[in-house]
Length: 139
Image (cartoon, rainbow, N blue to C red; front, side):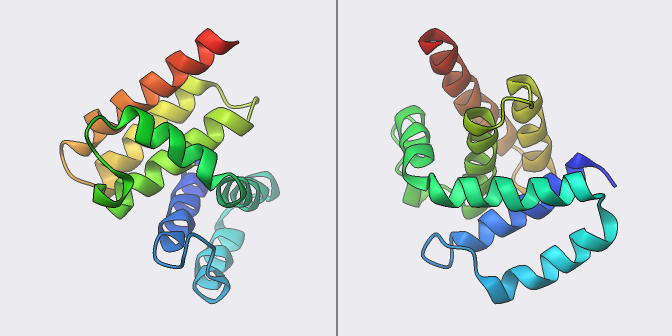
């Protein structure tokens, strides 16, 4: 299976974190990881473990970007699905040099179209574009 499937599994794990004091619930993760292991090749399975781990360990930094560019919105007001998609995408943008930023943004928009509301994809795209622009200026 594809990296898109791996991203979906990763988003589900990051989503679980939002309900478990921002940590991966080992018991809840077992089903998602077992299914992913059956469907994905080794590299995509490793991607899941790596992106979720990096997201979890850098959550404060990731959330600072979300708060900075979520004009007039606090993180606790965002839907958990949208928050999870943003966290995953920003983690990719910050910590995965082998994934082009545009790919991370486009995949986040596709996740939003599949798992969130009609307006969420535009909102997520806007925040991620601002994150990418700031990081490009800093480089």
